[in-house]
Image (cartoon, rainbow, N blue to C red):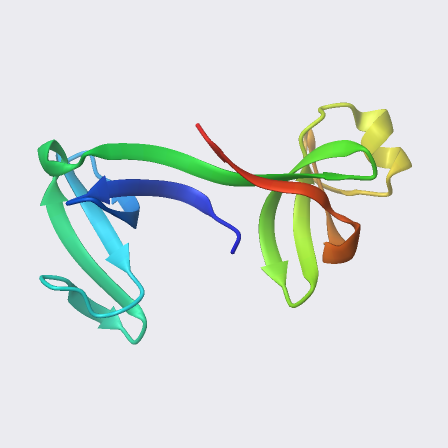
Amino acid sequence: MIRDGYVARWLGREFEAAPGADGEVRLYAPEPTDGFEELRPGRYRRIVPASEIEVLRYVRTTCTWHGERFVVVGEHETWLRVEYAGGRAPVAQRLGLERIDQGVWQTWAPGAEVEDLREEFI
């Protein structure tokens, strides 16, 4: 599973999370969970005070592709959408990456070619 976003530990369990400016944190679960309201099938939410959150961190998935460091920003079947994290335009061009924005280069990489897939907590 590719993760890119906030995660929170609440009552000893980890949840996908969205911190709010209002001092609350929205927690999300994929299955019915006590006290969570169903937003749609497979998506449940509970809003809790930030003071009840044990840990709130940002997680992202990184990898190495063709010897360069990337952040995984999506997935589809056996392919990963990767964004170059090296910051060097000549390298991005050599790899044939698509320029998305100034300094932002992405491509679809076959999952079998990706190495060192791991989560990083920021």
